Image (cartoon, rainbow, N blue to C red; front, side, top):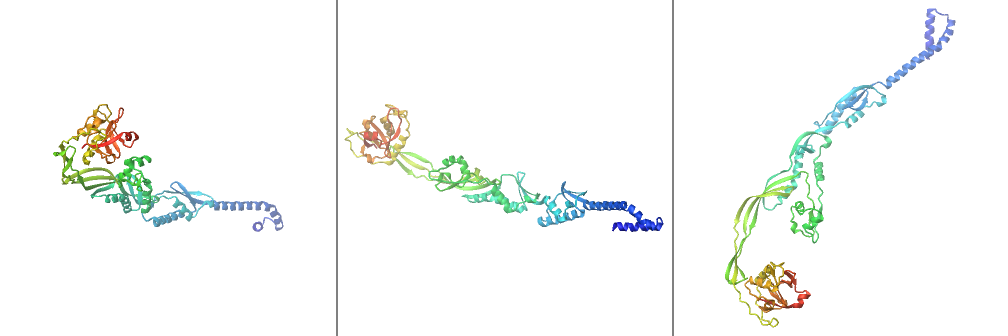
Amino acid sequence: MLQYLYQKILARRINEKGLMPMDHLKSYIGKINNRKVLIIYGVVTIIMTMALLIYQNTFSYQLHLNDELIGTISEMSIAEDALISIEEQISAEFGAEANYEFETTIKEVRVPKDQIIDQEELENLIYDNLQIYKPAAVIFLDGKEILALETKEQAESILNHIKEPFVEKIDQIKGNVEVLDISFNQDIEIAMKDVPIEEIFSTEKALNEIEKSKEQVQTYEIASGDNAWNVSRSFNTAVNKLQEANPDKSLEDLMPGDKINLVVEKPYIDVTATVKQITQEAIAFETENENSSSLYTGETKVKQEGKKGEKEITKEITYLNGAIDSQKVIDEKVITKPTKKIVLVGTKSRPVVARSKSVSTSRSSAPTYKGNVGSAIVSTARHYIGVPYVSGGSSPSGFDCSGFTQYVYRQYGISLPRTSGGQGSVGGFVARSDLKPGDLVVFSGHVGIYVGNNSFIHAPTHGKRVQITSLNSAYWRSKYISGRRVY
């Protein structure tokens, strides 16, 4: 078609100018036809190619956000519309106070058409690369940010929640308690600050964060035979650390089945509580001895019963995380004075019971047992456990058997012969089944003092010391003769 039109136009122009007869026209056209058509085709091809290139590589605009390439758009208005849409979306989702900081740069470029994005895709790319901020109540611990919440009221409720367990512990303290102060051991501040939205916690999330931060508390159930010392050794911890972990328990009174904490629970923030506590405490009474010539030596009698007094003590106590950290007495007042106990102590000498001629035949009945005297004799004898045996010894620097018994009984005004044979025939006879603490026990060539539970205290022999021995041992059972009550 293009060739046909060209031939028509060319023939008309030649004929009008009279340049050539019509019969030669066709021949002329035939000569130039191929060359012209090729030129026209070439021009058309170039025009089509240029049009295609212009279509595929038209001017576009690259949007950079904070120096980061976001995408390429066909018109600048697309970027403007996208930013307005994003601002409306952020305001609707996070409130009018939400903000973001960015710097945009737009560059004019030529890129293939398939690299150009539409407004929706641009909005998504911009949104994903924005850091959105919002004013939040930030809790600072010693100048360091630890939690961000939406409002100051929420932040204050979190701090009160941290204090609450320790307030409850103080409420459980016995006595008249006045809370002077409950505060944090560190410097705590709440301040408003723009915070990335993903770092702002809800109240529930903040509480979960606090619970996660606590040290996991391990518990142990007390078994039969356990005490604080062996539990502390088993878990490689100190007894005082166990007490800190269990401030509401007495470790001395642990019973099988009781459960105790093995480590101290570490709070999110250390809480200090200062209280004034008023308690009543007993005042111990004194005991005063008063000599009495109406009582035998070794006998006592209470002349006046003692009575405890009472005083009111005011203390200022500081608790750290529920455990006592320090305390001091700030006032002490006596409410009732104690009454002194007065005990009469006998000074009258006892008559020495006449000795029988033969140990084996002395069966005179024993005096009535006086438990207070017998107990006192045993108590005195125990003071000398560990004193070495010395042949002929009769003092705390060294005893033999009869020297030991003579020395002890003498302190109660009871005179005994110096030898074991002589001592075996004084006082009244006591059957083994009737022995009482304080009675003299006689063996073949040996003496001692009965202490109860089928045992006696004595100075055994060379190389040994004053000790308690069982009457049931084969050796002493075979040598046993009798018991004697000498008071």
